[in-house]
Length: 79
Image (cartoon, rainbow, N blue to C red; front, side, top):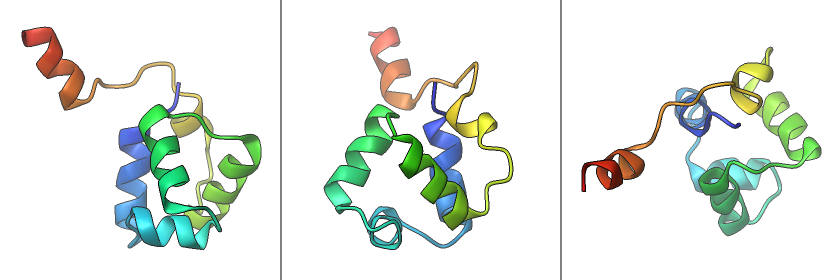
């Protein structure tokens, strides 16, 4: 399971937003956004993201055992 929140945090820490990261990764912005929403990345995309963000241990992000729920999921559970 991909820890998308941690990945988004690393993007911000490195000065990227969705648009600039997509451009740096040579991806369409909408495709990158979809990948972030679904947490589904190809091995090549994972490798490129790791290179872009200097991620030393991709397991913590791309193969996380537990991921904190996002606000949307929490809101659904309260309803």
